[in-house]
Amino acid sequence: MIRQALDTLKVTTRGRGFYEVTREVQARVADAGVQTGLCTLHLQHTSASLLIQENADPDVRRDFEQFFARLVPDGDALFVHTAEGDDDMPAHIRTALTSVNLGIPVTGGRLCLGTWQGVYVWEHRHAPHTRSLVVHVMGDDE
Amino acid sequence: MIRQALDTLKVTTRGRGFYEVTREVQARVADAGVQTGLCTLHLQHTSASLLIQENADPDVRRDFEQFFARLVPDGDALFVHTAEGDDDMPAHIRTALTSVNLGIPVTGGRLCLGTWQGVYVWEHRHAPHTRSLVVHVMGDDE
Amino acid sequence: MIRQALDTLKVTTRGRGFYEVTREVQARVADAGVQTGLCTLHLQHTSASLLIQENADPDVRRDFEQFFARLVPDGDALFVHTAEGDDDMPAHIRTALTSVNLGIPVTGGRLCLGTWQGVYVWEHRHAPHTRSLVVHVMGDDE
Image (cartoon, each protein chain N blue to C red):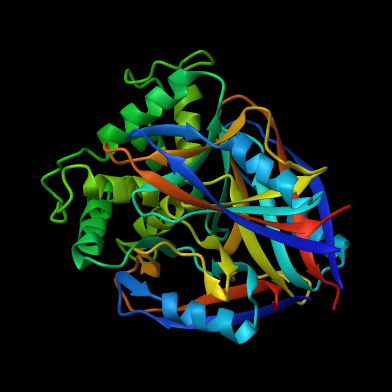
């Protein structure tokens, strides 16, 4: 029988950087009692995003930060929308270049992630924020 | 009981820029009679994309245009595929850097969008186009 | 009646480049016997991605490669994570700039793709790889 569960995870960030949520999302899938189905993640913000990336070497995240800081520089003179500071518009653009929602199939009660894949909330603002991540699970209980 | 609805929205653009469709998509969710479920949007094109972004300050969209025009310049000598003009290949790349599909959970009959999130069709071609946006809703009527 | 099917496609790549999987994915949708529903694709890797793009002119793919090679250069001195070579970190970033999962509605037993849309696995590493693509289909058999 098809069942659904919907929950909102609060993710507290300490400013720009990566915050892994794989375990918390997997726990929601388990709670939902879904064996085969689909897990959809939606981050309700425009200045933080979701990223599936390597969870082994921390240098990967460091290099991501370096690359994106060069690609979308804080305080770029191009930007007019600077109401909330130098990192305001860059945070929106970094979000658009990545994503705010993901759909991950579920099998055997587990997210179908690859061996090296972790799910991260990528905070793009320098200040700490509390981010809301909607976790929706739909599928069969067998 | 799980029900589904599938519809195609026609979005008329006046050339490069952002066209908000949040209200139209929400209306399709209401028509579907789904209270809890998932709304999937798929734009059937390769030179326009979907973006969830801030719907408050219009400067945000202006800065997006400026940034992407610099990142993927029209008429870049790098490009060979120029059959439809200077903005042809840049439109494909801008589409790839953003997305053509989104999955947004639904609760209480409404899209789970954040306070500042709006759903936009981002037209990347300079000429006006009619874009087809498939809206699929699947979920429970209670 | 809602039914589901989940399968893993193995995609053998010969190094960096585009590998179309539209036909294989469509075949899984047909096998699933789903007429109306949702097909979710998830690539279980962090150095290859999924892209929906034009499947007519091969120059489009050539221009994509040229553009991304310039945007995220192999061997960029910025990168610390180079354990697997010059194309290691660029492959992660190219993956993040595009996507590893897609949700495509299904109607009349077929993926709702636009006329010019093809689904590609984009291999970002220079060496050949075998990539795992999870294909999940959920929907109604009528």
